Picture 1 (cartoon, rainbow, N blue to C red):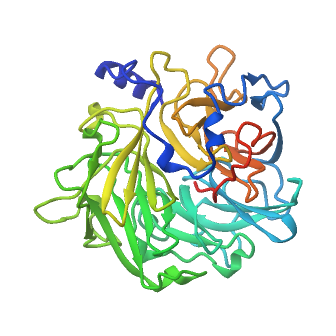
Picture 2 (tube, rainbow, N blue to C red):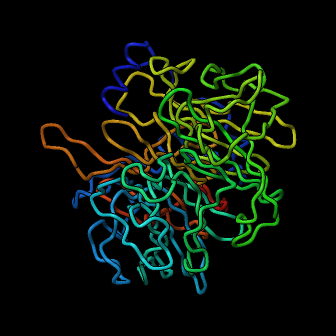
Amino acid sequence: MSATRRQMLARTGVLGASIAFAGNLTELFAGSAAAQSLGHTGYGPLVTDPKGLLDLPKGFRYRVLSREGDRLRSGEGPVPSNHDGMSAFAGRHGRVHLVRNHENRVAARIPVPTIAGLTYDPMGEGGCTSLTLDSRNHVLSERVAIAGTAVNCAGGPTPWGTWLTCEETEDKAGTNGYTKDHGFIFEVDPVDPHRTGAVPLAAMGRFQHEAIAVDPRRGVVYETEDAFLKPFGLFYRFLPNRPKGGVGSLRAGGRLQAMRVPGVPDLSSVQEIGASFDGVEWVDVPDPLAAQTPIRLQDFGPKGITHAQKLEGCYWGGTSVYFVSSFAHSVEGSAGDHYGQIWRYDPSARRLTLVIVFGPDTDVQLPGESPDNICLAPSGGLMVCEDGSGAQHVYGVTRRGEVYAMARGAQNIGTPEAPEWGEFAGVTFSPDGETMYVNCYTPGTTFAVTGPWRALAPGVRTQSAVT
């Protein structure tokens, strides 16, 4: 969170008005009762890293897998900058495939190299890289997975083992030098990127995409929109023509719809944890390609549509989809103020419920504001990337709603007098739950963190990690 945004919250009286975490997380996480033994101190206090990269609890260690500016092992060029959303996929013989977004805009520090057959728009500087690791987290390969896209922020994994990377922009051809329209989702095969190429999934909409989550039983894809200005973003679902999925299945098209919560035009107006709304409606998007008008500004009829500021992380858990609103500021046009919310939508019941509210109590430097990328953890709880100001953390949330610091960035990108730290992004776990992978956005750094993940929660296994 920038100083300006923090000042806005202070003027509205929100600072110091809420507890660190609230809500009942039991519904979110599968696992034994032992997971609830993880207390508010988590794995213990963070230990200062003598190398000045990443502070972790005692007993945990990290390996730097990749840093911006290093050479890609493929020889295709330097590792691009702005490491963002990421997911881990199981490979053969214990290998792990990581797919990593690079949220590069125009004039990026280090753009994603353009590669024949993998480049959408040669003027786009964003994209993805993929890493293959052995069972000990040694990097076996690192290469470009898609190039020529723009502002690749987050995305999400599919049940069939691919990554959907999302462009967080609405720039059209002729804007910022682009030769093609942007604001799409692209499918990326982590093993063979040429299998998926660089084909926009146009039917899934052209807007400021953030993240996705797939209902593994119905094949429905849920999408969040991180719009910067009012009217804020929408929460979408895509009904694919080929719901059974498979590589390339989403190219067959489908219907894009936006969520309408009757009587709730802005989710930030809801403040009470546990507030629930039945009869959620889904309305067809008039023009998914937004040829003339951005989707959030289109005419959804006399009942309108439901908006929310800063919609970010999205993941599937159990029988429901969960999505994050990182914050809401009334001074920026939202109906209410908050430090972050997590919402649960149950498609069988057509019910939307506010399940978690974030926010520091009195010390605004503590973890607990502006949640961004989220994944399920081996402890039975959550790991959350903080995108605020001051010290930047990856922090955990237990099943009882307790918060603890899991990691703290130690790379000062400011000055000794005015230190700054890059946000964390793309937290995800290996398929066996033994390694947490996470990115530092600036300077772009990908870490593999190992340690006694199950020491305080024996027998609890992680679910598939999502971003």
